Image (tube, rainbow over all chains, first blue to last red; front, side):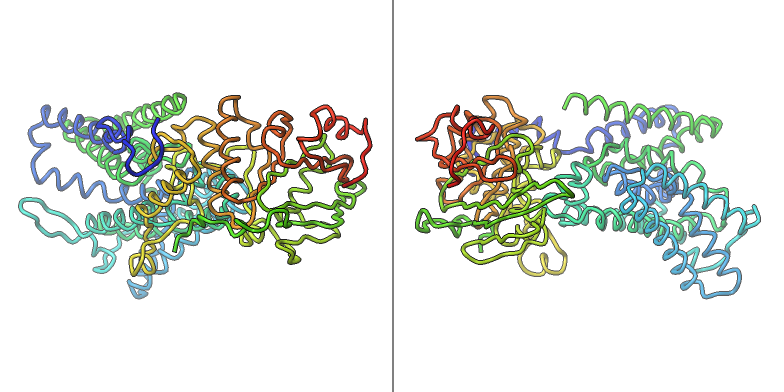
Length: 328
Length: 268
């Protein structure tokens, strides 16, 4: 033991703990392992064209997983990620098809998604309801309501502004969309919020020990409300990105968004018990889910197997989290 | 600029001066009278232990002093000025910090983050004012300085609190209070959750805080600890001040006898 003076040798600064200090190292290894397996089994996997498609396929789940990360960091969980995003696509699509201004329609849809998050946050923070139940209820309500509004069916959304994020540009032999850029930009902004500001520090503190956070004067309830509202805002923006991917508003879309986004978050090293983890891991986690689904599709395997494997993945990731928690 | 008030306002003040004073505090919950006209004074530079049996009114007294409870009547004077705390934040703004029995730290965050929790330092200039950026380096340096000044030994300032022993963790919570308190620190059973050796570390830290000039109110059930640390012992019984004694003139048996009512003492 050395005293905490600046000149004292720092036993924590060894190579091993440096590696431990990069929490995303585990997920990166998993991602590389999956890529290796798929690259060996199918030479087309590593083609720039296919890698571009993986990135584009990751946009929706990857962006939803940002909001999911925020909620899980506060020791909550969001089972309505997909439903809120679909709410955004249906509302924006309906309004545009009715002849309203596309930009205002999208804005209105994003605001609606934010409000949905705000309501969930209010129920969680003011009434102390379990996030699991609040968002499960929201999922049920939204799914039914959206099917009623759209009379059960999907409808095409042909509009330049709503489809804007699907526009492509080339980087070398890679084809990227503006949606990919938007996703990465959102990751950067929320990463900054979480890691470099008081607001983010308090998200971790609340997830870690809400009682301690309250004792040092952090307005815990207000903070939770903000987290859920920000998550809703992110799901709303995802709706715009989703319309860029597929110009179709479908009340039955994104059924696996819960599974995929939660898998991305926990496989990225964020603890379901709150207060540990972060967005770098989530981005890797989302890529893992994307690579897995893409690789299995390339191999010609039934999509149901993808859900099955993702299901196994999420359980394994949580088991790791639980075991390392027990060791603490 | 130091946000960490290295020198408490109470340092060097003439010893014996009352930093915190309460007169005739009364608080009842329904028919239960928790405080029945309590007088209290904390002097500059002392550790004042508050002892009493369960239900004697210790925690209600402490809660009135930290602003968590508003007394029905009576007055509280801080540095001779009457104060009316509306809540714990109010008391904190006036320089009173509290430490609780359960470890009020965020285990996954490092020591500087815990020390500055809720009072994080922002970068200077636009980075801080517009982009609200944390100044992690300055927080680390200030944390190192504070820990060195309190002579509290830690493996590394960058350690996550969960990697510390129980005594070191509570040490972080105690140091946080000491570093931000301008007037006094109130500690409610700070060692109750700790083992013998770890308790020793925290007791030493409390003594260092007193030696830096910050007066401490220590609530404890542990008589040996109380006799090891306290300059004066404030004994409560049945919502009243039974006696204030010195550990130099009274034994543990005396204090227990006063606590349980076996011996009556003129209040004073």
